[in-house]
Amino acid sequence: MSLASALPRPALAEPDWASLAARARRRRRTTDFLLFAFLVVGSLPILLPYLWLVTVAFSGRMGASTAVLWLALAVLFPALLAWSAVRVALPEGRPQRRAELLLLLATLAGLALVVGPHLHLANWRFLWNPDIADVLKGQSGVGAKFPSAWTAFFNSLGIAGAQMVLVVTVATLAGYYLSRFEFPGRAGYLKGLLVLHAFPAMTLIIPIFLLMHWAGLLDTRLSVVLVIVALELPFAIFVMKGFFDAVPWDIEMSAMTDGASRRRAFLLVVLPQVKVGILAIAVFAFLRGWEEYVFTRTLLIEKTNWTMSLYLFWMREDVMGTDYAMVSAMGVLWWPVTPHQRIIFSGCVQAWKSCAGVALKRRLRARLGLRAMTPSPETRRAGRAARSSSARSAPASSSPAAWAPP
Image (cartoon, rainbow, N blue to C red; front, side, top):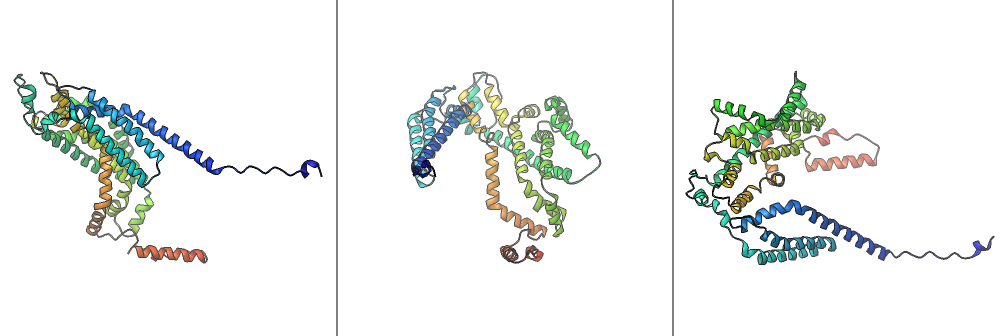
């Protein structure tokens, strides 16, 4: 035996696990803080125009100044960085929520101290003064008065809501039929939808104007609804067909085997599987109807039929000089619906699922006379017991009666 092997080997030093863990935590927190800061700085070019619109609407005086915007940013930007540090440094729970609440109160106090003296509501007088045109135009000779801002708001809301309901209904039924049935000309119909979706709608303005004039629908909100529905349906049908194609046929066949008709299986089994697609086309359809300008400008003449886009356009076209502060206020009134449809509709869907969804499904099942398609708690417990007993013994198939609908 050699001398080197006989000598005792030095013991390996035990790693300091506590210092290594602390170093990893510091590295993770630093990385998270830098990531949050990068996201805050990167979102500024997107958020600044909206923040400027809000500050001008509540502080502008016959102009669009950026002074209040920079004052607000001097408070909000450090607050966002401090919020990022709080989210990274403190563990989740009560200490983090308490720190965030204190930071929110400090931010609001800073905004009230720095920006508060500049705020006023004079730019929003069009909400309670229906004769705002007299204030803006005076005796300039333009003559025509604006309608009430609330009239334009509800006209836009009615057009967007009506065409959204029509697009969702027709696209859902058409997409299901194209996905589940074969009929002569189906391939040609799909190709025609693709051509219609790619066709530029601006080239149809004059023919649509003439058709609405001959049909007696010119200067009616119904004409705008029909035109937008016709333009949105090809895209919506393609989207819904794709969602219905992703639903396995076995699910629908199982419901029909249990005694449901095709209509009942469609309403209670297939339709809940494609609610994401319905939400998507509803958002796109509502957005198109809410912000439509070209066809409303072409087909609507009387001022009682004005929408928000027309109201904002004519408010900007003032021969005595544009009041950009009031235009900004009108934009803020128009803005919350336009970029936040996804948040609004997802909130509506969550509220429907949590509050009215169960009652609506029960009433629908009772009206259609359909048995419950999901097993009761007792049936689920019996099924779990049957599976556990079969797993402990020899493998055997579960009893179909245990999973039969009540």
